[in-house]
Length: 73
Image (cartoon, one colour):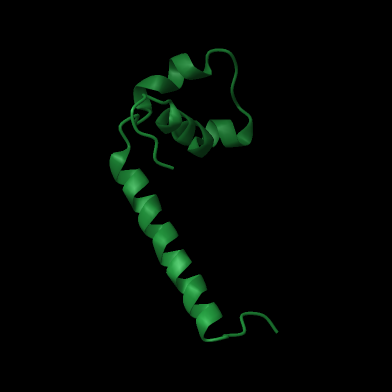
């Protein structure tokens, strides 16, 4: 996802959905007060890593389709 021209809170949402406490449902109204100091809201490198993975998977899917490779039996 790439949005230019406006500031978004997408990095915060990425951190929240990856947090173990959030995943396990162990959070309350004090969750953000507790977690904000440890969240990386300037996660440019992790976004770049995700984009690289997506590009690799996309390429792999294209090659599978081009070569008509069976992936399931």
